[in-house]
Image (cartoon, rainbow over all chains, first blue to last red; front, side, top):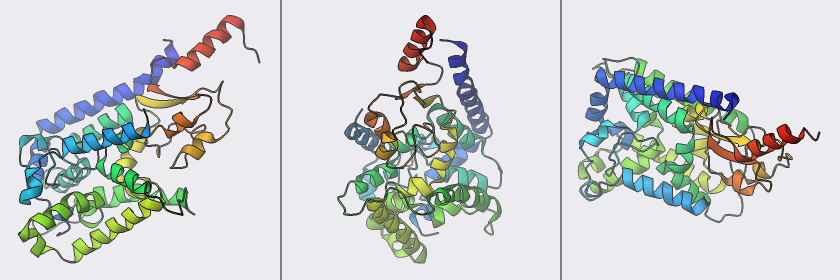
Length: 50
Length: 298
């Protein structure tokens, strides 16, 4: 594998790491629990009630 | 992998992520802890069978909450999925994508590849993302200060068919509560379902905010397409095979590509390769080695 090929992977790998860090910090500040609280109740907007 | 296998994977994934079958009978939804995690496709968390959360719905809810004006959790999820595979999810894992795929198989005299103003219509999904997914939750607030989930409420056809239809059918309380909004959302849904028979994936092409986000990652995702310039004669067969009318030989990683692989199967020269960025491309590398060894014949 030459350097050009390797450099193709730098951006996506960096983005994946960034994405995972975002998720970890998001979970840490309670966003995931907020999502869970929403997801376990019937979403009236989604159904079309409002 | 052929089209039938792709549909089997779409169907299998849609079933696995919506496998809480008692919900369909009881008119209720799953309330277990797996819903803390998002699924990659536009799969409504109020579908009775849903085991995970919809990232677009979750994004709107977090943005609309009083505690956060930016969602690290959902943004991180979308960036991770996008950076790994771009719009692969749209072609292989999204239940609403599967529904449109199947509807387009219905034999009909007219099948339209593209419409007038297609280039501009494709921009609608970015406008919907900005206005209904981001701005509505941030700025259209109810008396409690909770932002409105604009996309879920006014547009999302996936929510209408995955959550609305089964819950209205099986839950008396919900059936008694429906009114204008349900009719409006059904109008959008039915229009899209009918158009899907004639035009391939109209929702994904023009309206889906999740596809808009994943599409940005297509050119830089780890999984991407590559054109072997040495063997590609730019005949356009790939574009003819593409139901989204993408000139694959020019833009193999177009933001509109859902990675269905039809172009790969159609190319007579095998010039379109899929693979992981950073790994060697077999045809390209074999040609390169020949050129290095024997000199460029041109």
